[in-house]
Image 1 (cartoon, rainbow, N blue to C red):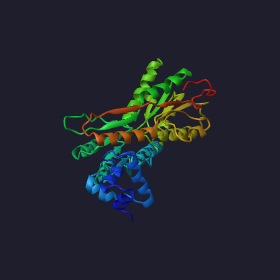
Image 2: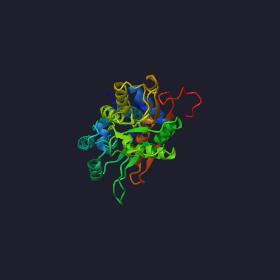
Image 3: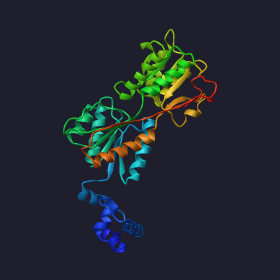
Image 4: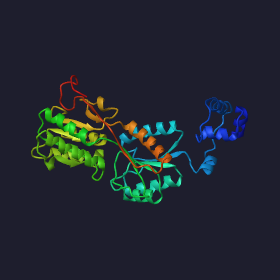
Length: 345
């Protein structure tokens, strides 16, 4: 197996120069850098990650804690995180906290014990244990998708956050349905305590107010961000004496549950009830009718989170920041419009 000394001899440079090229620790002249990279390729040299970690106290690895298995949305975020990490020369360690505060605390500790340089976490609805652990051990971290209230104090932890807009896009769905003549618009919200749930409810209520419609608490139900929960919640909505004529679901998993409930009640979309959803997903345009949705920039959210974390590692003392990325209104036909033509995006 080729060593760093072999690479140095082949490139005609010092071992220190090879180290600077491979680790990015000091600028190297372009022709020298290329000579080193050519030697690495020719000799088939691979970096000894463990040895480098002992010297630099860095493993060039990132821990990612998201519920990717349960939620297809996080699967797309994972793709963005992985691509950006690989491009920056970092490996990725993945853990699934199952949206459970106790399990979340455990998997974050396990990632920390693997000596990751930093973490990207989609927090649970009760992140107190998570915040306490990260703060106590001074772990560089970026919160993803769900925001947490972690006031920064002098000398305390600094947590960056990356998410999509939630309130305005939800308000836009309400306005679109109201513009089609709907006056009883139901909302299937996610798990209480999540910032995404809170903000989408805010958007729902502001959309009703903007349309001149009263808020009726009976039309707001919680599906707990899951398909099964949404199925039960929508069934409850449909059992009301005056059920909604249009429905907004708060994420892709709950959209599936809502469709199951509507089918069980033999209701046709959009003839019997209009449907719009937050989260677009790969098969949304394969349903009949095709689903009108808010598309989040999920892969970009993941990639941005990696870049923000790397900036935090490079500048540990810089102020914390929250980045919000815009969503896209994807008009199809489940809202009841006769066609997609002429609808502004």
